[in-house]
Image 1 (tube, rainbow, N blue to C red):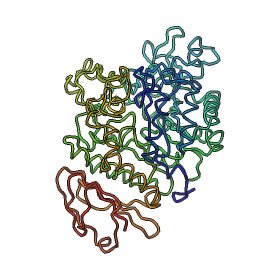
Image 2 (image 1 turned 135 degrees about the horizontal axis):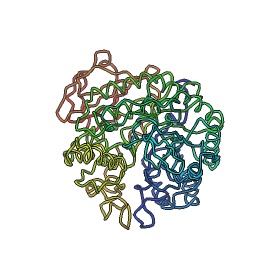
Image 3 (image 1 turned 120 degrees about the vertical axis):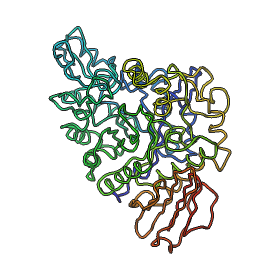
Image 4 (image 1 turned 60 degrees about the horizontal axis):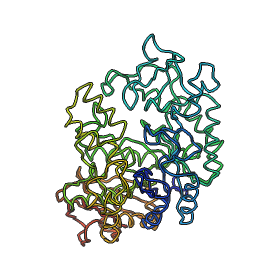
Length: 563
């Protein structure tokens, strides 16, 4: 298999649903499976092909479902297995595929395996998790949890510590144990045999740890704790484990597989998405959404520089062209809203133009596009004043660490960080209309609704052919019409730093994509080798004009020409 080989998952557009916040069907304030089913026609109208569901399994919700208590049961708040079967059937009737979120680096500490594991040192399930002796009265090493504090939790009954790279209620599974791997493969088969169309695999490159468990570097980001990433990401046996998973399960089904891979290098990504297809179809890398990170990670007041994102994304476009496959995203359940972060939501005009430009800039590149719920409407960050308005465990722990304990930020400074970068920005309820609670629920929503819902909602955009929704719909349709958008080779063109201009090339065709990241007018001169070619304007976010050799780009303007 090479880059030019046709595959349905290369040509698909994925829409991510965060079920808790998408649509509530029963008035309890929590989104559910029946709510999703009632909105399938909306998703079909948008033109997407695959629905990625964030975890819907039984969970105590310490991390909103990414702590799984039972992999073969549905979270009661979301409905029943019958509700899921109905959703799957109705989606398939409309030609929509379902991608499940598979979280197997860790489980909830309330999972049967872990409850057994902690009962005694010689319990048959003990080795399902990573247990270690302490160093005197201290944890086995200095690793930080990515949700702050120590990555080790002391368990008094057996006088040992267990590892949790995330919350203490998310105990890391021990993939060195063949029985664990067999259990994982069995539960994957359970869902695939039901008819689901693939998996997005949460932090899948964390499943192999450096066996010596050395101390990590103390950078200040996690206070006195060390960074675990070099020893838990892309570990020594990760490719062996994924090849086994592929051989035992994935290769036996016609499915899409997406690996979330924090701190992944290009060389590792090529192995994960190798042309022989022995591991995964594509990876989710984080380089482009970390350009403004500082000493305290994403909790920073720095702003992104477009030249950094251009450089990074171009490296990934070039690097995986012949030996892998990219996923294309600005947003997901862990990222803030792209129009507030990379665009400009300061005025209605700049909000609309920058939201459309960001979509055009990303989805004309090579890779499988991912749209996060509400992104197609230009949903914005919420900008709230009180930490009590947020539910995200990561943000709450960061506030406690960086404001209350370390005192590196004032309350106002930290709220500025959270309002720009916090994960709950993506988790406020979907804005269906301008009625109470944005049409999301007839009850009290589990998390407050973004006050912007009266201005930004699906109902108002569906009746406006010039809306952001229809711009996304047109982009999706263009991707299905023009092979070059899926398979063309990317080439970055020289341009002023606040413009991002590139071409895609295949079989004698050229696609020219021009994007302005400036709120001011900018001039762009078409390169001589392209200026004489016949051209067709496929899409743009302003009324078309005939200017060609020299273009005066309006604020946040984008244009796509087929040459």
